Image (cartoon, rainbow, N blue to C red; front, side, top):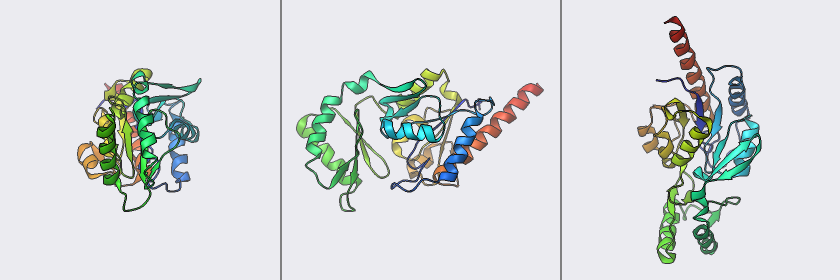
Length: 254
């Protein structure tokens, strides 16, 4: 395996537990500490985020984890920048905004769903109760797509359903990150938990999942942690550093 030069992590189900659980502040502090070491130690890859969350949420976590390299928000639609501060959107994402706005107007008539606020190039729906689960959201979306001739894509996650513009997904987001940072995909390690993460995990040189990941993800990645959420991220980070250092020692010995 090539030396890992970038560690990419999903948020929900990886950095934090799903169902809007409280942050593991000690765990996040450990991740931040490892990330800071990357500025002085070449064997420690910098950390970044690839998430479906909107820009303000991703930006806040970038501050918490002291992430200085760009990150991806809204499932590949946008690139968050820390220095200089800002955000950029993919041209492909702009083309689908009219359909997203039309869908949003229709969805507001469904009181059994909750639309996540703050997104501008995608939509995310949560069920309000157990009766209106993920499958029901998918059914309603498929019906609305057909009725209004909407060119959009359904992307289910563990606790919600994302609606994306065709061609804009986390796979595109990872390639965008790699291009921006000049890092070959073979030198990227990633950790994700939901089926929507497979589009980018499959492109990583090293792909991993926490123990709480969906079964299909656990079966598809290179390694599965015995730990959940942020503990799994810490384990992966430390193992990548150990592997990089071992590879560096062998290279110097040659």
